Length: 379
Image 1 (cartoon, rainbow, N blue to C red):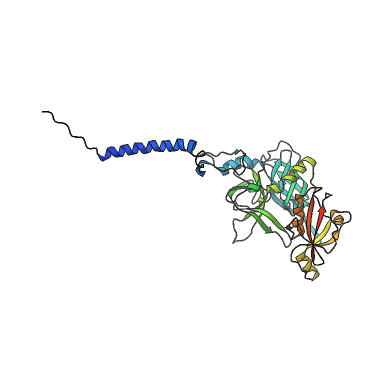
Image 2 (image 1 turned 30 degrees about the vertical axis):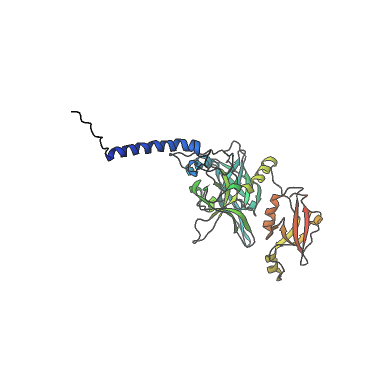
């Protein structure tokens, strides 16, 4: 007699195996098909598929860290040979005596034919008696100051050399808070040359008062460690490009980790002109002026306005003279940008070229008037 075998009951293990195989196949399909077909074509590509989002469309990222090298190490390898030490001898006057004082700072090579960017205060605002530049290979060469501006705290030093390893300059207009920042310099003397520290860009467009009447504006704030000898050294992004020149650190036990750098875009046109022409000239108004607050304090008077620059003297045949500015006028704005000090006014003039026009808002005899100045001369 023939008996039909009853169907075999499947155990729970067989169901688990089938589910596991299906999960593996599904994972492979999603890993290889989704990124290449769905993402970027049907739905946006998620951030995880980008190692770093470029801040400028079309820029090529030259630094590609792997498991064996970090961003910071890659940046250091690319840029460290462009960083120099700068030693100076300055004359310091004390009452009737004078004495020589040694100074130390950093700089960065911005052109292979010996052009080096640093801080103005590193070279004594142009008053350094002697300047020596120390290179990574151990060479030392004398340097000359071609240009400096104390209000910007920037200077260009020239050495007689060629074929130097020039740093690549980035674009500081596209910085974002949270991006990687790497500082290289000589923080505490020549025993610690080319020290590398890292952090992030902590803030943008910061303003720092460096003395009673001078403010440095539009600074980059970073928590990358910056100390006095770092002054003039580069602040770099993750591509090894110079995005700023380190300038000051807040000296306070309650404010550790607050360093500041001057955006590189401020000085790019200056470098270009110095390399091409040997010097840099800017437009000028042709006035002698003083800040309102300072004028009130010195003269013991109180004016009707709180901010601005009061004109003390107008040089003949200058743009200010031809515009009709007079002693006693208060310059409150230039092209709608408020003026607070002579140093700020000087920095604003860097935006203009010979032949450009600007609209001045002037307070004259208590009334606000508008005048147009044409920059016809350079200094």
